[in-house]
Length: 169
Image (cartoon, rainbow, N blue to C red; front, side, top):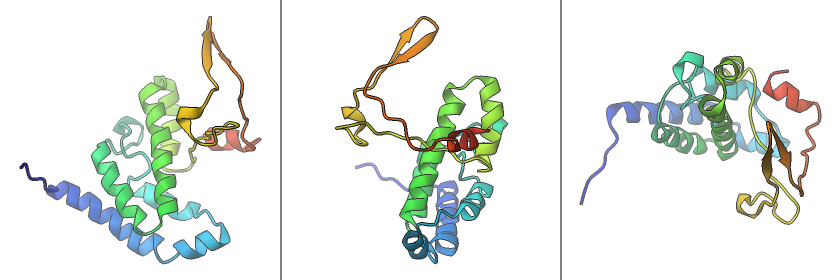
């Protein structure tokens, strides 16, 4: 049976994230939850440690680490506050999508501010009778020439003008 062990780099990454969770997240997690507080200042501290663009390329401020490194980080962060760990994982996923699928201009416009968490990223996924079950969604984007047509049923999230603020307005 093959054996597996973390190498010294993986241990350092895990320990850095665990120390952050122990010192910055765990002492406040219950209070944040009770008060419905989103600690932007603390998640920006995580960004300063390279946890906001984990698998984004370095030329736009990313850490250029692996998905395995990210799993170690998210697991360690979740020991301090699962909600903040979940948010940081979603922020990373959004940053990666821009890094992977965005144009060079989009990458350079959005990713440096996402890597520092000057701007925060997220996504919304909901639909009548589907909730947040992605497999049950019926809305589709169908190419029509140079555009896409969104089929029903589509639900617009109640973010209003906040969307522009979040992605670069």
